[in-house]
Figure 1 (cartoon, rainbow, N blue to C red):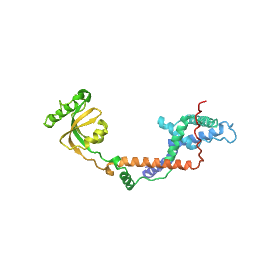
Figure 2 (figure 1 turned 135 degrees about the vertical axis):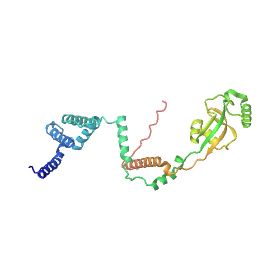
Figure 3 (figure 1 turned 90 degrees about the vertical axis):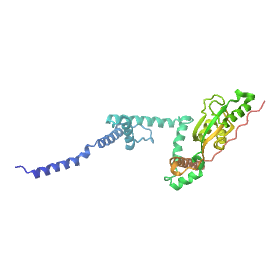
Figure 4 (figure 1 turned 30 degrees about the vertical axis):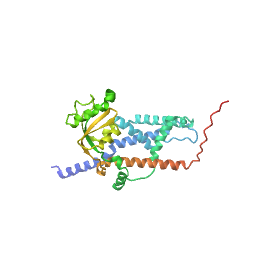
Length: 300
């Protein structure tokens, strides 16, 4: 009779052996090994006709980055032949770029200048080490910029609009007559001039009203009492008789309400300040001379 215990133990041992040997079958290991092999092969077979002092090293990190970009685009690792092509293309680009710099082709090119400035700005913005802002940092920032985050006053109002061009010399009398009817209880619909504007406006932020009607109109509207017909108030649409129906005063925002915006703005201000300091330090290393503007030629 076969020894089941031995057979079981043998099977378990075989499974352990298979697990120990599985590491060398990992695709990532094969991929990295192929990349390293291509790197070594390229170093051996590539023509060595470089001018003395010119050395181009394609590091293993660069090879891995090239392969990583390929995999991100195609959702698979490159084959050895594809990776070799990526390395060849990288070397071609690098030698052309270096030659362009040697010939001064980067000079006086506004596109290259702008791109270099953009990249250096990122360096400058990150030049000052910092940690994430604490609640105390954010609270102080919120207090210093309270107007930016304050919850605006809200107002709802009814209105009647008059176009000055339609009424001309009768404008003042027509407005007074319309106001008397409104005070007496007439509905705003059917009074005043036809308009696309609503006669009854639901409550909204006074800042939104200012965007729609103008800041001057919104400021005057926010100062009116609730419940009575007032005006006329002027906007870009004409003259308005208005009745505020509800009014909610503005208030400072709490950090909990605006944390995301405060954090974003705090970080942006930090980057701006860091870049300004970085630029100031760079300027201090230069002797800067500004030549005077040449005087225009006078009449001969």
